[in-house]
Image 1 (cartoon, rainbow, N blue to C red):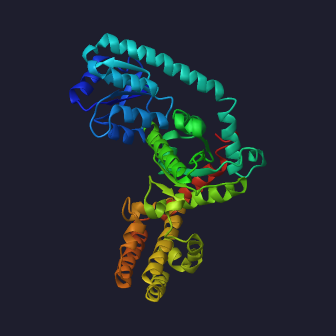
Image 2 (cartoon, rainbow, N blue to C red; image 1 turned 135 degrees about the horizontal axis):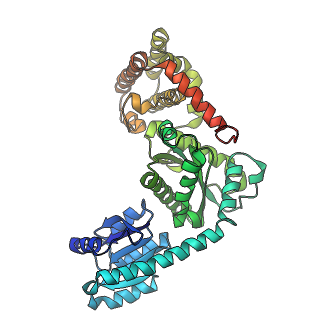
Length: 435
């Protein structure tokens, strides 16, 4: 199905367009509606649309400005303008911006709409054939090169140029549930469809390369062509959000994502990939289904975060194993430490502990949000604590809550079985002999 968005400030016009033709029979599906150009642009950030039908005169943001901005984001987007008799001067301007066709509101009928959709489908098919002709030679080869480079293989070294770039790393949430859905044939039922969805987004095909690293993880390479790298960062963020939304809408796959800082040379690639992974792992503190950008996360220090794991290992292990005696020792040590720190350093220390607890629970196939509160932004919650006493009380209550949950609700034996199964799948998913 080709995807359609209708934009008009009049409800009756949008309703009429819905009912005039059998959209599905023509091979189209109306995926979104908007009352003005501003709403339409917001929807275009998340929806992959093939055909945009828009009024030319609207409040807030009119059709001309919408066309200009939409074409900047996706030059291949087909746009049809709705106009009145006295607006042909605007229609001429719209054609200069690259619209596909126009319809007079007063003459819209089932016949004219079916004729329009027939012409549109032919052009969309030609676009698809053209992309497919280029794909074996260019895009698939780049996918493989990017995958090899990200996995540290020699075959990937020819992928990079000296052009500046960003890397984004995506990870599927609730991967165990996804495994249940797609069973053993992950390549054909999960990975290939994920790639296919990505390739339906023109901005991805023209400006990025996306490939899988494992069935659960995918990497995006964005070539920055903007003079101001802030503009490139905003565009790649927009592309990442759209890609996440497409996977969610078309495959019911929910992902979290981390975005690196700008890489300027080939030698920066490994560091950019590490930055993207660091941001991705912050989903445990920021909440899942978000895009977390390295250049916007300045509060935490990753070297300190790494050191914190060893420093608080007793407390973390005590929660994991429901060791009440060791837990109390760890809590007392933390309380004593916090009261000697500044409020900012104490906040960071608490966040580091929560982060490592989350990673430890994940190893046991248990998400932190299942234990405490779904969608919790720990960074926001903890940085709002203005005094050490307030922070200490919250943190002690929080840790006791985790300890109580692990003691009374968690089946360790079952977790061990699941963890072994998960590790086996991750290590052997590409082995042909194993079905």
